[in-house]
Image (cartoon, rainbow, N blue to C red; front, top):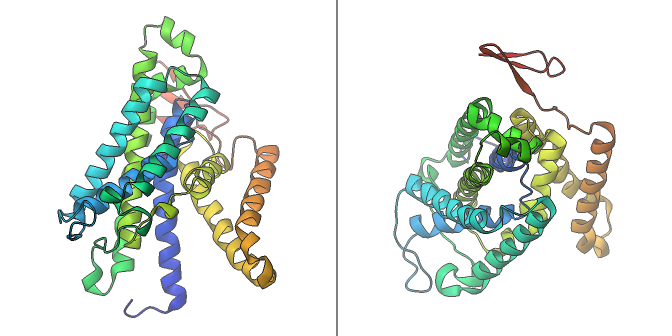
Length: 328
């Protein structure tokens, strides 16, 4: 990139990755933090968003796989959100009457089905060879990384504001009521399944947006980029560490855990002998797992605890233990 050295380029790359993960964490916060739905198939929505946007915007593949539509980037991102949202709707209609642990098992299975489908259907996704040449906006300007970082940060802010507004709205209050006690919410006349489906589809669509951003940032995707360890487990750690139910905590968790994840890669590569480098991935997961246990023991609510709102007359106020904020 013109005018930037290696350290500055890496910093921009790092912040862009944090921004993309922050969007996924915000999406998971809608599903788990607001409505208490245990989605352990995050990587499926993330991958569908990436592949859909790559196919819609990519150049002609010469008949090797589906593609060559050459549509603009916004159309690709919206298409990824729609496809991921449709998968979320399907899961919602079939599985959202399951309780937390059974829903987790169901979403794990569906995510693995999606991953294997994307890996093996070469006519659609080019199989294990992946999709190259994904358009990268602003690339011809010579400032691709900076421009893309700015775009990602703008989208992080927009997603944050949309989810924060939804959280404070009556819709968000119903979701929290369902999360705390769905029998009571149902007795109050709320459509529990309907609200849960809405939250699940909303979160799934945002995950699809993040997947599309990842595809256009890297410029190449394959099934190996969407493994559950990074595409699901790491994101759960980010949300729990940052603070489930708190949108600021979701963003903070993405930043903190990505710092540790990226830093551990460098440290392990320098400390371990060459004969043990193949075990580095397992050691990094072990490190993150231990860190998660420490956070759960010392700060069960995460780095930033949830701001619980209660109503007093015409004013909705945060719990006094949550910074005594007022929300009008």
